[in-house]
Image (cartoon, rainbow, N blue to C red; front, side, top):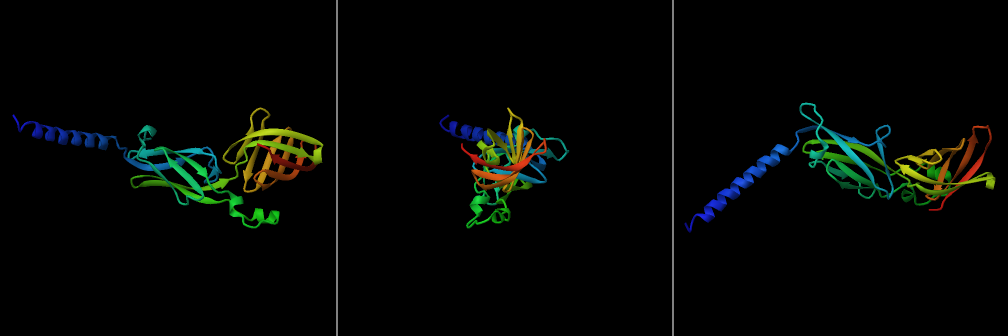
Length: 226
């Protein structure tokens, strides 16, 4: 009887490991197709906002073409091709991405608007992988323009404050219906019958021209105050 416990425990341990290994193997999805998903993807490019986390996910299919339950996608790993531009936190079937450098970080000596227009948004490749199956997408870091803006038309003839939210390149103010977009330094905003079209001169300043539904035109400036 003195020699029974050790062999019995050894056998039980081996059996337990075998069962666990078998169970783990059965739970691993047979993934043959991965696709990175986000509502912010436009023309094959995914925007990431500087210093603001954005959640992205993947859809997956198995060898029979069936959708794989996202709760079983713990095998998925995420990688950024340039960690100085794009930060990625893997969460299995999803990931939190955050831009680390915007186009103003890429500028060293700016003297004119033309310098800004010729400076591209920093970019990196985001890759999602599970085993030998993977998908990748180009990510470009956009300016973080969400926040409270003071907009002035025609040197003070009309002023408004808008607390804009941001999702990818889209800016919006739900209460007033104001909505706009960012593309590099270009900033377009539609609100109260006015279309503002201009450029960011810095992360907190912008200016340009406007036209209204009534046919009036003029200039505008904007300052981010919060």
